[in-house]
Length: 168
Image 1 (cartoon, rainbow, N blue to C red):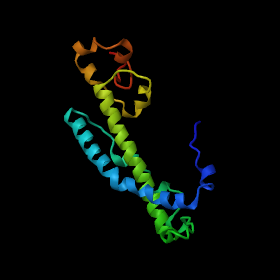
Image 2: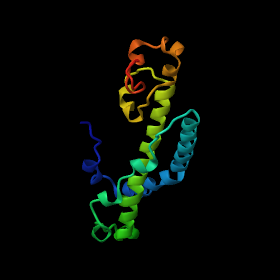
Image 3: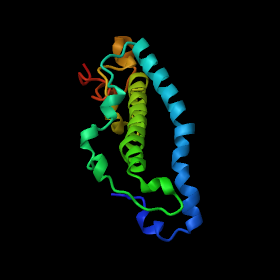
Image 4: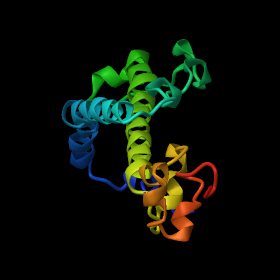
């Protein structure tokens, strides 16, 4: 498995880089998340308008609160001399129980919705299409009308990601 190298390099970073780098984790809240939320509303509305049903909710992507390893009173803390707020458990609860899992869930949910759109409008195989199984659908746009179905490559006609009947 390919891994990103970070832990082995963290201790080698100059202090000024760490001080400047830590607050950068919060900028996506202000810059990216609002646009992702707007995108989710638009894509989900599009899917509903073209007839999609049984779309998972955002909550399906959020881990259960009880699945977190630490309870609030056990949450580890770390003393960062220049960042006083990090000394408190509430800092780690807000980060580890809220910010991280909710952010990951948000981006996974957005990707899921886009996979559904891709499988609906573009049921044409490419090198990474098998990774779109999370957004599998019953039939694609091209499988609804038999006149359009004949235009598809045989592998695209029977792909179970966008045709649950396997080519029928």
